[in-house]
Picture 1 (cartoon, rainbow, N blue to C red):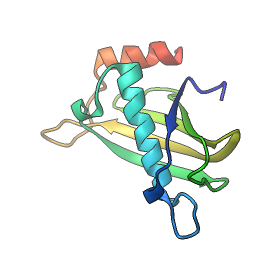
Picture 2 (picture 1 turned 180 degrees about the horizontal axis):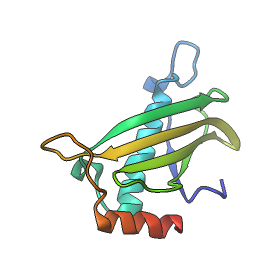
Picture 3 (picture 1 turned 90 degrees about the vertical axis):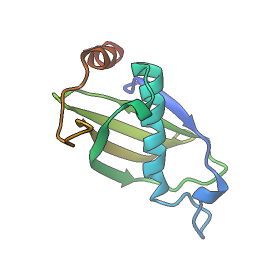
Picture 4 (picture 1 turned 120 degrees about the vertical axis):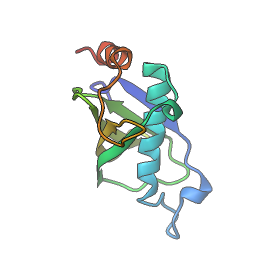
Length: 133
């Protein structure tokens, strides 16, 4: 995970499992969401509750199943910033194995109009500093 600048731990819960004893495929999106929450808190210094944003794109490629016994981490990076968008690349790991890769694009929106709006400069600076661009 060296190419990823941020990693967070996820504890699989019994309710995440499907009838086969694997983490349900839809729950992977929840793990990505938790990584965004943690990144926003730890890197940007804000709670996602303070952000008016929507997910404009979500793509997950599954590589292996996850069980409740697995140690799960989500690594992420922001390769670039748009005017109002934050593209993110993720890697969900179960132990040393890559369980899934994902791309997410989050777009900041004006809370009154729902239209895209610029990323606040202070948040942009914190992301850029953390990501090294």
